[in-house]
Image (tube, rainbow, N blue to C red; front, top):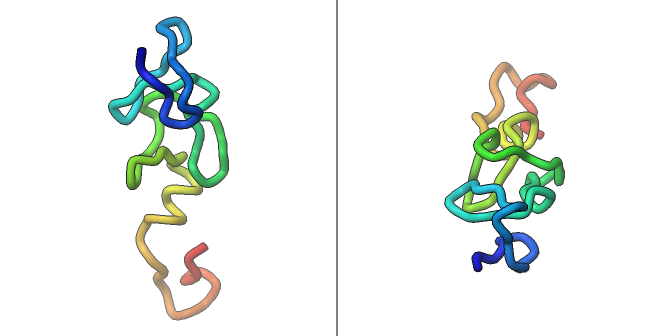
Length: 76
């Protein structure tokens, strides 16, 4: 029986969600930053951890600042 990467408990067929090559419980597949529950395949991955596309993945791993040093060039 596979184990959930988040809670380390067994994942039964009726409750499994497959993502990042692993089987998860549906409530355990959450963004590593904001803890929003994610759906299978509708999220980004970095370092083996799931992230929601907006705003977490973009803010953490997206392109750096731009502009001339104003508020638009700040990376959150």
